[in-house]
Length: 105
Image (tube, rainbow, N blue to C red; front, top):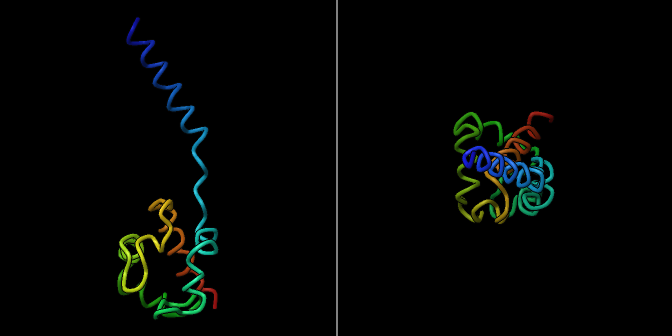
């Protein structure tokens, strides 16, 4: 009986944590909150939003490598683009959002 109670308590804790966890930000939300500070103007050589350069970077490196570059930081870009509380999934979504911006032009 103790084991069943432990399992129920564990499931209740997991459910409570899931209910209070903030929803993941979209790529657009992360971009607008942080990334655009550099990627909208090309500061320090940052690929600009909408620039076709994103397509060549995606072809050359792939989304996985571009995401890792953003997570680790590259050249003048700090790790996670300065977004200390961003998840890896949110960073990936922001990178994908910037790649997609080049496909729309």
